[in-house]
Amino acid sequence: MNKRDKLFILAYFLNIINGIFLLLGLMLVAFGHWILLDGNKSVAFLLSTDENSLIDTISNMLLATGSIIVFIGLLGYLGSIRRIRWLVIAYMVLVVLNFVVQAGMLIRLYVGTEMVSKLWKVQMDELISNYGNKNLPKKEHQWDILNGIQRMLQCCGRYNFTDWKANKHKEHANQVPCSCTTSNMKKWFCDVLENATYTKGCEEDITSWYEENIWILFVIHFGLLAIEVLQFIASAWLSSVMRKNVILPRK
Image (cartoon, rainbow, N blue to C red; front, top):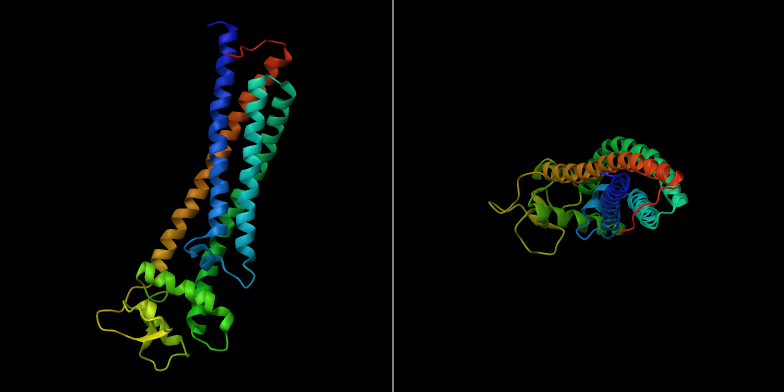
């Protein structure tokens, strides 16, 4: 195999790993948009605060990182296809900087998982305690989210339906939210119905859902770090070849 063929393979290899890099970046952008739109409001429930600042921070971080990765990937394609050495060098430098940022984000994500886990449990306990309080009309949106989760997962309370005994806003003690039952009534509370009230708690299902999604993010970040190492090696080699004024085949 002559040198020109080897160089062609090198450029081709860089474009392949760059394509994977682009795909992972687009996945981060998709995650960021999903959190913002949040069709079933599960993320809003897990991360909700009075200003939803945590949701905004996470979604904006994913959107920004994903967009930067897409930009770097497109820059790499342009540099390798057009054989522009300074673009390849710029691409290599940005890959190194992005590697540092990604490593920091991975650490932050790992530390933040425990914080989020504690946050949603405290949030759910507070919602159960305040649910139906006529003096807190601003909380009705969060109560609707909780009702939606209980209906969707067919669960009741965090541990089980007895958690609702802590609520002081029922007409009488033998009541749970209507979302804890098979009833379609639109009231806040319904009487406990024999064989029609969900007995299992929501914590196990919510935790499983959260862990599945957080591990997807971990896999994406680890994939990006591995790809960036290959990108740096390939782009450094390609830049070295260009410096020697070797003409690469365009086809």
